Length: 380
Ligand SMILES: Nc1nc2c(ncn2[C@@H]2O[C@H](COP(=O)(O)OP(=O)(O)OP(=O)(O)O)[C@@H](O)[C@H]2O)c(=O)[nH]1
Ligand SMILES: [Mg+2]
Image 1 (cartoon, rainbow, N blue to C red):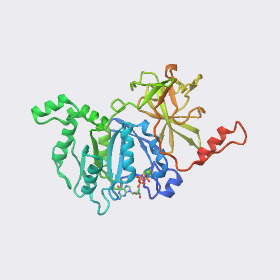
Image 2: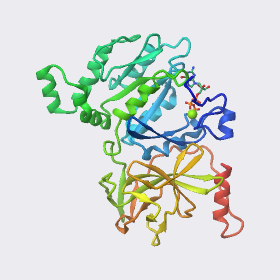
Image 3: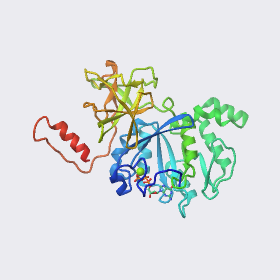
Image 4: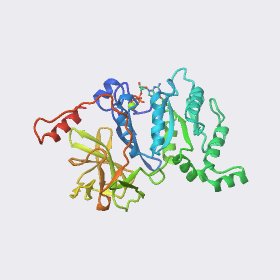
């Protein structure tokens, strides 16, 4: 066990805070988490892997640079992992694969690793490997050699470097001339390879024993793309039937552009619109429009979410995930902005799977729609 870590069986994790999640021992909805590590601020959205709650998982994709697909070493690749790999790729997101439960009895980590490469392709390469009977993991990106349980660290290191330099001609030439290249020189090419889906790093971890957790955080902090390094979200400006793609600059000084990817109800502060800031800086004095609304609202209180906790913060920058309370017009998929030129900016619609059951509800009294929708939202 990791010191102070929450435990799923005891219902003490920060992420699965809902009593229903604790009862069923499954995440039922997406949860926002954040931490500071290695001088970086890292936002994590924990999403359900249970197929019935897939909508909760797909709807948060526009808020992230990277999708980390967790594979249970005991059960191997499940159907949803395949579908998520495809969805993430269709959304142009960087991907990584985290093999969890490496501590569990009788796991065949080499078999899992091979099946990942067979299923998802040779661009899935080990960035670390289990060693000493999976009680440690050894880095293969910075390390040119080392001991591992089933695959040569030096071969894994060479494979990652070979794959990375393929996206950069200059680096490739340098590599061919010198025969080697320092991992530190690979940073930009590594980001490009992730953006192009040319490389999908695989790493190993045990959430139970803590093996590989520090190494996973190191990968997040040192190697995975920051907001300036990921692919731009598919924002478009509508002009009648035409749509023009928007070039985003994740610049804190730019116009504000943010996307609401989740709406939830907090027992104390009420309706919360949770959004990812793509551009500009939002603080309590910011005046924002919701889509093409004429009238701006003032932010007032800005929150950052950590599981069930809302912490008030002073400002949010590109890459930040924040929340605002009690703005009636804010809905799932709303765009928040502060410049009328951006009235017609929208995120390209995602292809959600067809729901298998539909239900229509009508308010008895006109004008009660808002109350009804809030009650239904709470119920669901
Ligand atoms: N042995 C072992 N058990 C683990 C490990 N990680 C999680 N578990 C157990 O596996 C079960 C499922 O863990 P969760 O953290 O709920 O898994 P999840 O992927 O979030 O599952 P969903 O929320 O349903 O998508 C729990 O009983 C955990 O205690 C691990 O590294 N090793
Ligand atoms: Mg979960």
